[in-house]
Image (cartoon, rainbow, N blue to C red; front, side):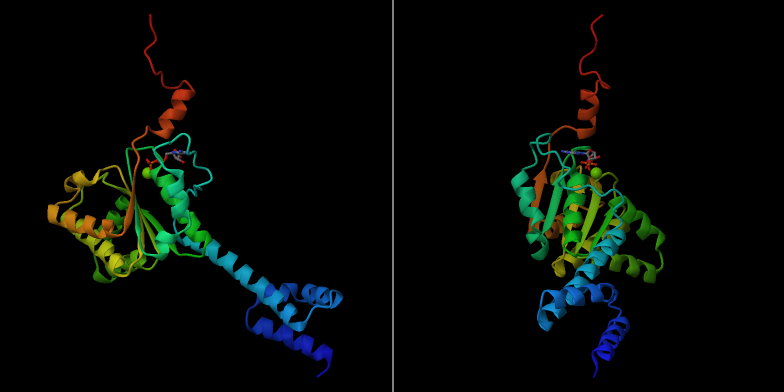
Length: 260
Ligand code: ADP
Ligand code: MG
């Protein structure tokens, strides 16, 4: 087989296999390979590495889009000095994603504005960067969607959406009390993920003791907490709202009444 024919054959193979990235760099990689007297194995390795890298980057982009994270907040953008209640060491450890690989949960508790959603999204973005599938939604979204999906098939589809990702972020648990069928659906999602050893990051403005107020039935609340907490890390943040802090510093909210 002449060199010209085999070059065309390689291009054809790459095209047939939809290896667009490898196809794009084929000429450059071959030329450089010849110049630097690389072995054929080295050249093949270079070509496949380029293809895999491109595919991985594309997967990250897709996973980010499918995650439904609207405002990507990174852990790098989190100001740990402003929130000394959040142990940076612990967040760094969570950012290694060991918890996710072991199917453990992370629960972020505290009043509004202390950075619970920011940290949850920051960890979720880490997971996406590593190629994991993530799904983010608020409990309010979950309840609204489960109420509209009355038909069994649509409810199953929603349940699948909650079970499929490697990481589920359930934001803002506790802002609204749940009715029995909402709570039952949430319980089903949480216990199925528990059985599959798939992680959840949950944020809540309620302490565990007051989960009875959110749930129509204390037994259901206990059973849910049981599964969530079995393998988990809880971070309770008691600091003040970051939003208010900023506005106070900007003088928009007077900290003391002006003296007349
Ligand atoms: P929560 O979910 O606890 O109500 P958020 O995570 O939504 O609070 O935080 C409110 C806003 O303040 C967000 O825009 C968030 O990015 C920002 N924020 C909160 N804490 C910090 C922090 N320590 N460093 C940087 N930004 C923060
Ligand atoms: Mg929040």
